[in-house]
Each structure stands twice: as structure tokens, then as C-alpha cells.
Image (tube, rainbow, N blue to C red):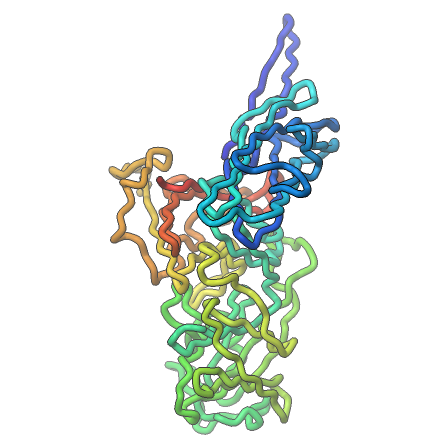
Length: 483
């Protein structure tokens, strides 16, 4: 959704006065309730900061739904008269009201309510863009809208999971876990690359208590012209997220993991040296982002299989004893995350059918730098995606491709064979230009087509990478259901 910014001017002789209109609109054109949802916040966005306090008059029309405490729905503020008065304060950038669903429709029944912005109280108020929003009390895919994932600003503290069909976003602090265990048929262990967690196999060891910072290798490890004699020398390369001695981070495209798939043969599973990455800083730093605080130290782990369950052994590097925990696969999620520092499993991903995109925060590459605006799609859960490139510029020459524009793209234009269900970083960081200059720019030469696990098709494109103050950590994209 693009809000309309209208500038009007009045001039008298040599003097001119310019007034910026204050436009208001619903953030999204539609929303739906699942059977478990009890309420929804309906957001109204402003084209500029409110220069004075005011009110919005919102009218509604119900279809087979009845307003009232003993009926189907209510609102906060109250809408008993058939309309709501929503207040906003000077300095606000938007407003919100709450819609409460009091009962689910019976099977086969459809209940909806439509809200319309009817009036803005302040003098220069303008109603523009999404002037109406359609709400369904039965679960239907959202028709689209604008989503601004709250990754948290310049320190990127949050990973965000997004379900396009429900417009639900799930935020998880990226320092709550270090490793995760695949719930699928493959016995894989994943690393939390948003903290630049890395891991290196110690192929000579199957006993955690035999490994400390004083441990030496016999024979020494060799990597081309480099000889590594002990743990301390090995640590230099392991903590970088680069390939100094080997691929210590999971591959960005999801094709391989730093930790070898866990074997059912116990002695095949070796000890791993794990660099725990960096803490999340408290605030901005000298650069455009500030993603790496103090180092979080070193652990050692070993993962075995106990039937269909994982058996994790782990300890801090200098410990002479270790903890052991059984982690069961949970078929409803792709992975089960675990915090080595807090000794517990952690709810991170939503159910595998309930998310499509993941703003992964800081992402450590297997052979390159980290990225802070990195987007993955849910390949493990069955989401497919591909990129449509409209033009390219090379040596100052622009080549335009014979593809529909984003606005013109229709369901009939979807290329099923192009949908990628295995390479999870089709979007990656390629949606924006590198941060070489003072201001980041969203690339306008591409958009993306996504098919979710229930068969809904969407087109999406990115519309922002910084906020109005040119601060990083404020991405935004728009999307539309293809019907």
C-alpha cells in the first residue's frame, strides 16, 4: 500500500505557502481470523506525523455478524452505534482499534464485517489508499497489504517469521538459541547464524571430557599450507564464520550444514568445537549497523541418536563434566531449537505450515561476510519462490526483459517450474543495494513470486530498507494475493 502524499500550494505575489496534506489509510485491505484467534488489532497509518491531536470516525457494515457482548464481535473503542471514534495524539504516526471475535462461525457459515474510514477531524485530513478493510471471521487468505517486519533497528535484535495468508508475524530474539534439530527424516543439526555461531568437527575425539583449550592434535590438522597443532590455533579460524580452515557455518542456501548429519552408529559422531558468536549490542555504534557485541565464548558438543530422538551432550570448553539431554523431533515444526547457555529447548519457528518468510537478521555466510537484511523462505515447510527480473544494467546499458511489470503480473503469469523449494535464499540480501553509501536503496529491478504450503500464490516486492531518518533495520515490503 502506498499512501498518497499531496502537496498543495497557495501563492500571493512573491510569497508561497506549502501545506502537506495529512493522509490516513488502513495498513492492509483485508484480515481474517483463524479458529483460535480471539482479537485483532486493526491499524491505520498516517502519511506524516500528526501535527495535532484528533479523531478518526470509522463506520462498519456487518454481514451475518452481530455486534454485542452476547453476539459475534465487539470493538475497542466501542462501536455500538454503528461507528467507532478512534483517538490519536500529536506526534502519532498511526492509530489502532481492536476487534474482538466472541464466537466462531459454524461450519459452512460465512461472517464478515467491513470497516470504512469516514472522517478525519483535523483540517488538512485526507482519506486515501486503503479506505476500507474487509474482515472475515472464517480463515481466508489475506488479499495482500504492506508488512514492516520489526527486526528492531540498527542492532537487528529480532528474527521475524511471516505468514502471508494470515499476516501474522512472529518475533524471536536472535540470542535465545544457538543450535536447532531437524524434525524431518534427516538427522540434521543447524546453527544460529544470526549470532554467527560456528562449529568445527574434532575428528580425533568422541569424548567431550578429553577436549579443553589445552588439547593438542595428534597428528596435527593440515589445511593446505596451514598446520593446526592445537585447539587454541584452531579457534582462530573457527570463530570467523568464514572458511579459514573449513566450512564452519551452514550454507546460506540451505544445501549443507557445518555439523555432519547425525549417524545412528555412535562412534561415527564426533565432538564439535562451537563458537557461540556475539551478544546483541545495547544500541547504535559508529557504523550504520551495530550487530556484534561481546563474544559469547566456546562450547563443545556431541550429538547422538537414540532411536528417533537426538541425544545432545554439551559443556563449556573448559568443563571436565558435561550435560546430556534428549531432544525429540516435533513433526509440527521444521526444527526444535536449543539454548546451550540456558539448558533448554526454545520455541523459535512457528508451525511449519504457518510461515513463509524469515527475516533472519545477521546471517553468517560459509565463505563470505555477514548480512543484516537477509530473507529466507520456508523450503523445509513446502514454500516455493522465484525471482522475476524486469531489467539489468551493465556497462551503462540497460536491457529490459520481456516480463510483466509488478503491477501487471497476474496469476496466469506464474511459472510453476521456476518455483524453488530447496534453495532458501532466493531473496537473500539481493533485494537491496550494498551499503556502500550513506543511504541504502531498494532494488527496483526485481520482484518475487511465492506459493505457500496451502497453494496460495503471492507477488511481493520490497519498498523500504531504512526509516525516514535513513537508519537501517526498518525493512518493508508489499504483496498481493494472485487470484
